[in-house]
Image (cartoon, rainbow, N blue to C red; front, side):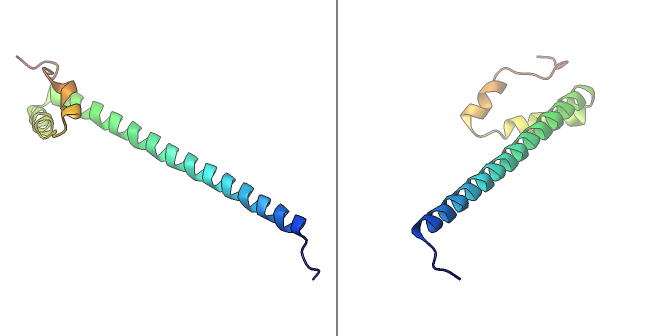
Length: 89
């Protein structure tokens, strides 16, 4: 095998860097898709829970308990003064 030239070594380094960049981009897309699906599941489950809570007192109690467990102020703020549809004030 002939001794590699500096140009051949640099070319190989560039190919490795390009392959790593492609791999990083693919991993980023996989992570983004995972977060998107996770967010979609949360929205769907939240909607189902809220719908069930308007129709069944057991679920309304669960929603009430869950909202009382919110510990972060920034998460609690959207629920200030909020009531389930159909709840009497």
